[in-house]
Amino acid sequence: MYKLWLLILAMITITSCKKNQCEDGPVPGEVIIEVLDNESPNTVDSLVVSHGLSIESTRSGDDNWYLIIVPEGEEEEWIEVLEEESIIELAERNQIGCIH
Image (cartoon, rainbow, N blue to C red; front, top):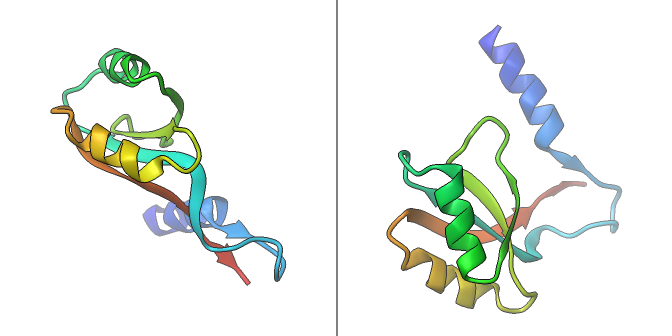
């Protein structure tokens, strides 16, 4: 059953694209953060809002990962700023991958 669940999850999360319709790489204006296990969603929301940013979503079933919307072209700067926060373990560009 576990292997079936993983297969279904993989099928849902893989973006299937026709050739030349999309490109692999970072998504403009999006940064993903991972926060410490004991941090509440309200604390994370307050931190993100204090920087003038917004949370687009959380990773399904995982309260530790958040998709943050940042100004396009400023992703790397925001990664540096967010990684300095004590509740954030990791900040990185959101990536897209296509199957050609």
